[in-house]
Length: 435
Image 1 (cartoon, rainbow, N blue to C red):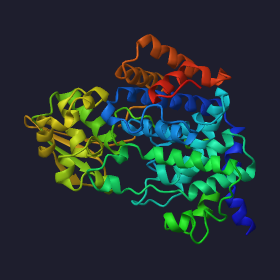
Image 2 (cartoon, rainbow, N blue to C red):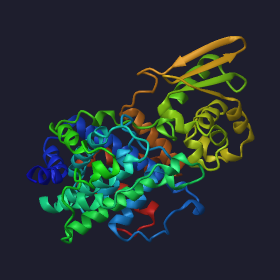
Image 3 (cartoon, rainbow, N blue to C red):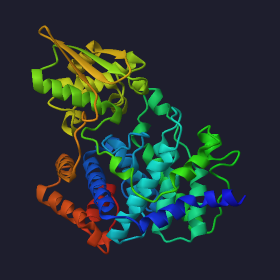
Image 4 (cartoon, helix red, strand yellow):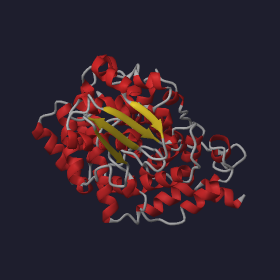
């Protein structure tokens, strides 16, 4: 039982230890991910009244604030991804941290770096599966840990917070597997809500179950179908460095991350031969991308925007029909655009061992295969440019957007982020009163 008790508290102790070890590189990564998160949340300012998913001004509790922040971070499908485990770390973790009472910008950056690294390690230790959105299933547990540590709860309460979040764990992939639902837009919000609520329950004295990771009905056995998960997680957390944090990738285009290589290859081919709308295009996809292709008739003719962004043929068609599939391209009535649906219906798809695009145009045959360099590298300048695109999309004046960006860049020097212009703008987006 002693090993189980140690395993119960492993997440909180890992974050507390890692927080003290955060180096400058990890801080810079955390800062860039905060820039990305804030920009995306601000971009949702443009949502119509019909698209709102919470009444303005109704988010009076930390867990409801966390829900909306995390939901908005994913709503446009523009949030970052740790592709090795297909999770979206920034949205729900920044939601959990910014809904806490911690106001020191430097500590928030350190806690984010530690929590994001933990999240990536937890997800990477999972045997690949198709049943759960790990962003939601594991994310609620990491969000609970991050929020509890931010609130400086006791070691026991931090452990209880993670266990209570486990009791709320969910995240079925059914909304992705069966077209027609719009709930996939907000699922990280469920994880953030559960995590923050669990931390608040632990703060009030509620005790969580023991052996929640590797017990007979614990996380590994009940959710992941893997009784060995606890042991692998212990091994994954033996070191306290930040080796996975650099691999969290900010999306260059707003859609499911599995679409990104196809967009990049099509953009490269467009640059070489010009208009591809009259070309014969074949997309070669590996098994892991199958759910974005099948059922093919529905993927070619999506009913909802989330379905469209989860469709390889539809996203490819939008890429071919526009300069690039950015926020502006998605903002018009793409689902009603007959030309895009026609292109999508004509694109050929074929399963293969690797991702590739084949184009036949005017007697020429060109092929691009995915490589390590297919996607553009992301650096602070690119993140800042994406932030400017998001604030412009939201209708925020360029001067105001620049002021927000400057504050985030100096976030580690802020002693009370609640009074800053960034949080003021976010509260306005959420319809919340001043803090």
